[in-house]
Length: 247
Image 1 (cartoon, one colour):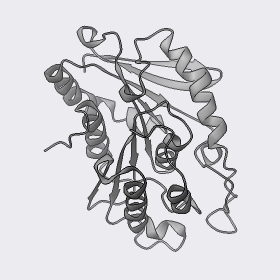
Image 2: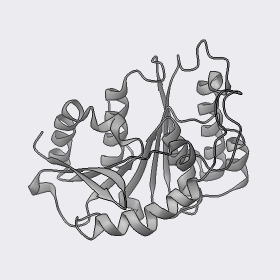
Image 3: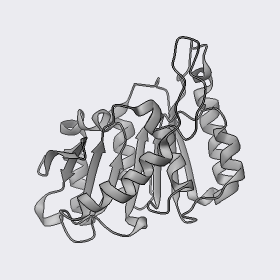
Image 4: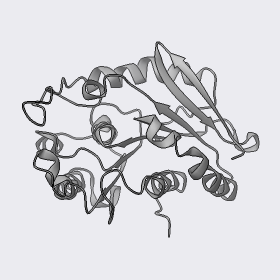
């Protein structure tokens, strides 16, 4: 890996920040903001060297901001909902407040120190699992991101499909990417058991609302926590290449 990773604290919230090699760290950099940042950054030594090769080929640097939260059940859910079962706490549904913090505090703080693009079409929100739900929801309440990538997202969240069918993204040009493992939900008895089916249903709802050309869905044969290297690599290369899936 030729780039650098630093850990920052912004208003008490941890941010892991990857900066590409200096020759690619130009003004107006592509930037990916990743929820549950640890899921990506613990794999950085495996993922980033090959990604840097693609950056060099494209002559395009990619900044990655890994976000962390101690209250993910609140920050990543769009509205209050019942928990999985009687032993699991209800979801508080405070994503709107978290997105407001991202826009009003996180973006300005990082942009003041680093060449993060001010253009939505050069910024992507990425999430895995519950933060994947946030990634798909965010463009419907904020115009600040032109790309949205949900990896094994929690598309089963109560009321989510209905919400997508009744609303239009604040950024009408936003491109959506969703992926899931075909073995997700196997043996589960909660809402999570329909993970694969719900990814397809959400994709259909997004396509109907935004146009099929703006939505991409892929799957693999893994479970929820499998194949993270290939899943993150695919998403980051998709964004870096302007919506082209790796061959």
